[in-house]
Image: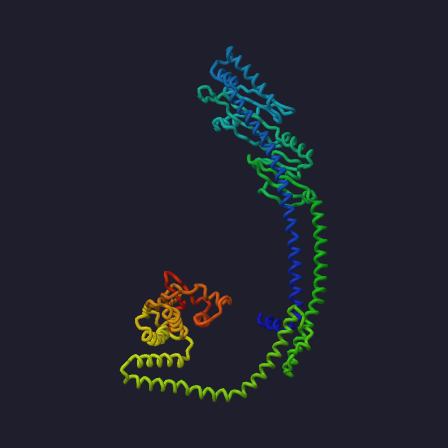
Length: 577
């Protein structure tokens, strides 16, 4: 794997692009050929749904006729005349007038009931005394179908109907039902009825109807393991199986075999001719694959031409790199044919040309800087002497002020010296809150002497945050702004509160005053240029930027005005030094 990676890394860009292009075309072609099966699968699903709907309609019609047989059996069961005469035959002695009249009446009712049937083989009724009444239809063979076993089976169903199938040379579908006495709900057994359905005739009736509708069916119908009907022996040989569809060859022809189970439990197995559809799909697939192959070849040819037109300009750029590395000569605008080209190739050339000119300019400036370096170092040495002279002068003034009657001069001089030393000597960009607060205290020593009772300062600083980081000279400029813009413009006492506490997002340090206030969106106006920075604006904007440079854009400076107080809040991270 490592060797292949190394080989790939060292291949030329042209070869890499060609391989990537060939791989992409191969993947697209393979995907296209694979997805050809998707519309075919959708067509098969649609064909199956159509066949399933047709079979469902066919099965519903057959089930409706079978339910009609069940309804007729119930009407026979509840017929008052039949109930009355069967009850007489049960209670009267055989041979009596009442018994003979009842027997004749039962025979008449059985003959009458036979008029209700269609698609039936026979209708038989056997009384509890063993007397049998039969009606046979069509060319059916006359025989006693109500065997003792069937009578006993019906008796065990307690008056409920049951459908039975009997396998044989001519499979039979039989409705069996016991007749019980309904008068006063005595429920004595009066007899048993049997209706044998001519199921093949029933199926053929609806097959003819489907054929007339233009949807001929070849089917087999199963009840359990018994095949009650089959269009031909080939369809009869198909197993019932699970519901669904599959393709197969039947008698040398391709067919779609669909299986469906009706609500009454009967299984329908049908076949749909698929040979013409299969030949059409095969032809369409061949044409599609030929088109995909031709498109892939054309894509390779066109892509190779376009790729050469792109890589040629990259080779020119590589030559410019080599030329600049050898001679170091910058490329000027008049020497570049890519100055107006707007694509990435033009941008690469322009950026390289601009880089060569910038490098040439930087080289010239560096030479100039080297010449000025010595003079700059001498100026730095002289500048270091000036703060020491200022410190020594302030120290001398402080010593003289100690002997003066008014000690405020000494205190102000001492505070000014400490403040100046801290601001000039501090080489760190970030200090602790305690260190920055100490500079602020020295500044306020001077201002409290100056303003006296007109200025009041309150400190509310959580000791737990004093070792947290803050950009140097942050609190003092905010306090100075509060003094200049509040104390100098007020006749009443100016109150300045310096607060610090931990928050959910880090640390908050704030400076509050009861002065005339300012706009809460002053920072946004300064950024947009709506307000020109001056005085307070310069300091606030400077602190806002330094906080974000030191930590991140999550931390900033905010202004809030509420209940006559102006509050400037600095949001800081809980970073300890």
